[in-house]
Image: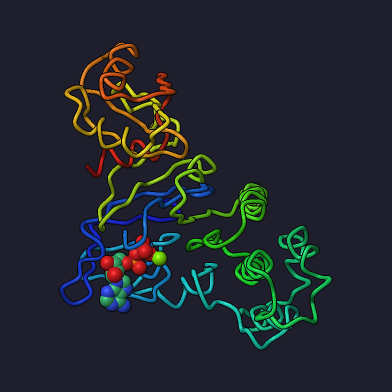
Length: 300
Ligand code: ADP
Ligand code: MG
């Protein structure tokens, strides 16, 4: 049965297509990532799975329950952390948590063990209004609120967007610990570097799934030769490499350009090309593909 089963789901907003024929199976207990840029359709898929939106086509189940027919039952057993506005800004930390416990007919004490290691970090601010918390603190409180009724499946829509790097890393550590409690976790992110924290991922773009697998299998599937290249005149080297006869694809990638060639070329041939265009301080080395390289190769 699995935690989530999605069959042929499509959804449009007037003319804007948000999801096109999505199929996905997520087994119980998995930490699954939906990876894709802004506008990919991640939030729309979450809203369908959390019963807030009805798909135009297709069906989906959560814990074996139909998202349309059984929406009431689903709402009781899932946790959902939407990207924005999930907290009551004028209520204190403590009051927000109490509120969510009450609407799910439970108490903070009943499942305190689930949230304890997260809640202790925000407890010193328990009297502070949620609206006055930092981004990282808000995120921790929102997670506590989504967990207080011990959901079977936890949906986290871009929980790390706009959060500093340290808090982002801490957040993923928390998800690992929650997974140990047997909760299925489905999390979306636009940050490709977070994909490796998931057991499996779906790459999503313009309402379509481009690939589903473990992050490792996805990067191993990148078969083409890939080089990290840089030269003193960074942007000029990008322009020049775009015109090189051996270039299949070249994109800026942090301090380097990532160059994919059509067929194997020795590093020297690339250096020679850049020298012929008067570049200096040239560095060329073979490199391993990242999720972002795979993503670009699938979308170009
Ligand atoms: P993501 O969460 O990955 O950024 P969304 O699911 O929010 O993607 O959006 C998918 C597409 O649907 C985008 O093109 C977006 O502009 C559009 N969209 C989302 N919500 C609405 C809405 N309420 N009305 C019209 N278009 C929408
Ligand atoms: Mg979104």
